[in-house]
Structures are given as structure tokens and as C-alpha cells.
Length: 294
Ligand SMILES: [Fe+2]
Ligand SMILES: [Fe+2]
Image (cartoon, rainbow, N blue to C red; front, side, top):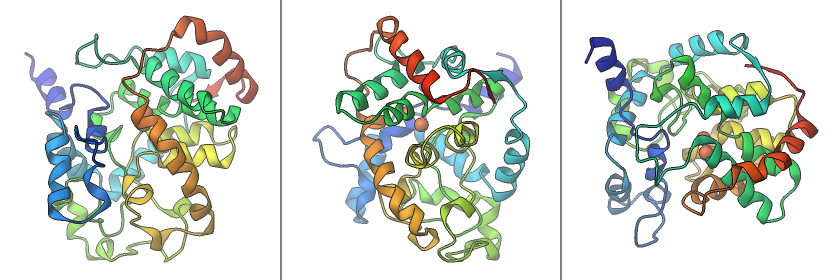
């Protein structure tokens, strides 16, 4: 194995890009995962629940996602000069991302997107909500631009202020250089109380990136689902409310409404991608222009 391949593998401890979510899925007994309460026994739950590599993934993410890193990635990606492509093309592009896991039991990226959208559609939700489900993970193409897993997926959390104990594996923040910066370690850090999440920098990943790509085309409820779907410390555990404003409180219920479709639609029967393609191509054309800047 070449040194660069070995280095890349060290940066990519997840066999499947969605394995980090195992910390949030109910355990075998059906009990909800750990982080809703603070009891130690519950905290241990998600550790038992996570698959191999997830712990190392969070060590890397919590160590490397500093405020400076996030600002640098925003300068790099938010001008959106990497690629010009339509939403369908982006889905096909994302599908070239092959996870290093069992292909018989795991869904391709397009299948995960369609399964999420189909579950939303089956519950009779509006068309923009179905479309939000379809596109919500397209930001994962960051992997195809060479970003390591810890800069693409995982729980998101604010940088530039104190870390909440509600974030998975909070002990790994000890190795983040920001933990030594006193200004960043007060509850509000560099932000104002009640400033609103629009003003807050979350760690860099697929959620924030996609939000900027699609922000002119979906209603604000759908945009909040996209931007905050991995911000579990907020939408599930209720942390960081001191940074939120009226708009965030209004949109929180929609972010929560979206979460089960993302997390629990997996594992149901695989969607028939070919048969569903015409419906989803029409839906995409209803909201998005033929080309988007990525
Ligand atoms: Fe996601
Ligand atoms: Fe997802």
C-alpha cells in the first residue's frame, strides 16, 4: 500500500459514509439512543451502538474542525466554482461514491435519497418536502472533491463557542486547538445571545455546503432541514438554544419532522430507481433551474 493510500485510509475510518448515524439510531431493544438524557447509562448506549471506525471518525472530526478550518472551507467552497451541473446530474455524480461496505445490504447514495423522498411522499407531505428529502445529502459530493470523511459527514456543532456535552464523544474536543482559546470557550463565544443560527458557524460538512447551493430555490423550512439535519445536539437534545432566535425556533419543528425520514427510512425495501426517475425529474424541474453552481 502506498503511503498516500495509507494516509487517506487513516483519514477515512468509516466503512460506510453513513455509519456515524448509528450513534442516533435506536438500539436493538428499540430504546431511543443515548443523548436525550444525561444519565451515564444512556451515554454508554450510543458507544455500544456505534460500528467500527465511528469512534476514530469522531476523534478526527472533533480534533480537526476548528473555527479557522471552517472559515477556510467556506472561503474555498462558497464561491461555488467547482462544477456546474443540474440536480439529477449531481445525484448521478454522488452515486459514483462507493462505500467500502457490503453492497448487498447497503443502499447506494441515490437509493438513500429516493428512499427518504419516497417515505416523505407516502406520508402525503407537500412536493417541496419530498424534494428536500431527495436532495438533502447531495453535499456529500465533497468526498468526490477530495475532502476527508470528517469534513463531510458526522454530527455538526457550532465552532467558536463552548462545546456541548450533548455532542457525541465530547471528550475528543480536548485535542481541538480551539479548546485552548478562552474566547471560544464561553457559552456564547464569538456570538451574541439570541443572534440566530444564520450567524453561527457550524463545523464544515455536506449540510452547510448544500444549503448554499440550493438556498434560492426551496422554502425556508426545507432549507433548515438541509442545513441542520446533522445538528443533533440542537434538534434532538435541545442544546445551543441560547444562540437561536425566533426564526430558528419556528423552523426547529420542521427539522425534527424531517429527521425520522432520514434516519429510519433506511433498511426498508430498495426503491425502484428506474421506475421513479420520471417523477423525480419532473419534481426537480419544478423547483430548480437546469444548472446549478457547485
Ligand atoms: Fe446527511
Ligand atoms: Fe441522509
